[in-house]
Amino acid sequence: MLSIHELAQALQDSKFGDTIAESRYLYPIFEGTHLLSLSLSVGLIFLTDLRLIGVFWRHVPVTAVLHQLRPFILSGFAVLFISGGLVFCSEAATIMASPLWTLKMVLVALGGLNALYFEFVIAKRPEVVENHPVLPRSVKYAGFASLTIWTLVIMCGRLLAYVPRAGS
Amino acid sequence: MTTTEKVLAGIQNSLPGQLIGKANHMVIAVLQLVHVFGILLLLTSLILMSLRLLGLALTEHSLPSLAREPGRLLWLGLGLAVGSGVLIFISGPAHYYYNKAFDVKMILLLSAVIVHVLGFRRLAQRQAVRPIPARIVVTISLILWFSVGIAGRAIGFV
Image 1 (cartoon, chains in turn brown, red):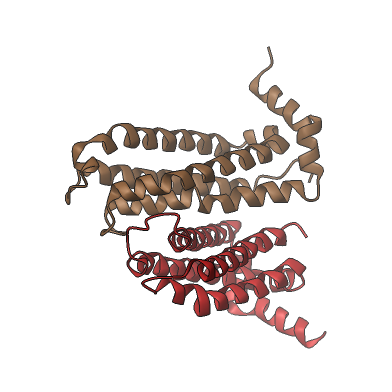
Image 2 (cartoon, each protein chain N blue to C red):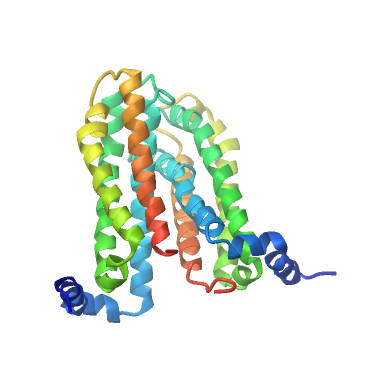
């Protein structure tokens, strides 16, 4: 059976991975898209978190922010994941060797779980659904958790750029 | 040595230039992180205001009441990005000065700020906006700011 490392090496050495890594335009385009699509995905999550914490847009109901920004946040994440996946294909084995990558993936998973827990448990509580003036503390905690997790994800991602690229 | 080269060498040899240049890579890495978070804050605030201006979200709330806070966050983001950017530039002025993408980035940045101050910001302060002019200003603004980001990414590749 192939180990994960061998699979990653095979992906990196595949025609597909190699084409991205060697192309003058593909790698920069995918990497740039990955970085800039953060503004639609994680960026809008950050502003939502600030609303949950209660320091941003206090006059706008939490439910309005959550529901109306959701389609844009989700499309942002679609672009973020696809572009990130394409960058990954070109340097899978090299980048997986860095502990920063593992940490980033663990944090992304935590960010996802936090969002799911918020969406399906905390946001379903009557105080949130009915937009009470005082919201349960868990709303604020979820906002802080999300803000912290995604900040760390971006830090890991930016620092991963210092891992030498395959072939360069 | 031309005057330009002298100026660039002067910046690099100045006290702040020496301090940043000689500092370990962690200092540059931290500046790069601040730069990224500044850009993210700026672009996200811009997107949020744009969604309202285009009538795509939160139309039940008045435009000025929604635009005030993201408007400030945009300037905070710009401040962080420019502040960290200046320090990164000081660490290796010649490297950036002779980079084509850097020139393009600076021109785009200046244009984006002008369009923001004269167009976007004024539009976002109004109680009601007409859809067509709003769409034009928002589109130009989004293209300019995102192009600044693209040109910035290009610095590392040209």
